[in-house]
Length: 71
Figure 1 (cartoon, rainbow, N blue to C red):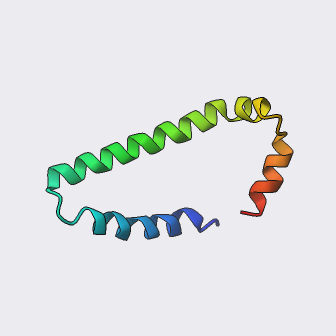
Figure 2: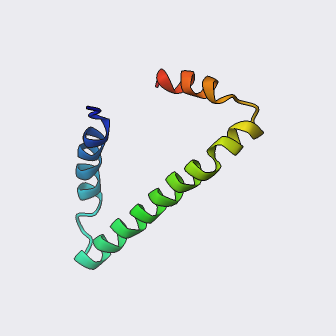
């Protein structure tokens, strides 16, 4: 089981709570929706355009996978 997503979430939640302490409930909800929409747009665009961007930059998928394995 990969523990990176739950650990990442646990790291983000205190950061979000700290930086939205003075926000009203409505503003905090709006901030959550905005962040979720922005994250979805970035992930969706990478999923749909990722291979085209790699091809445009003349990077093979295998090279990208090797590079990502060391991150």
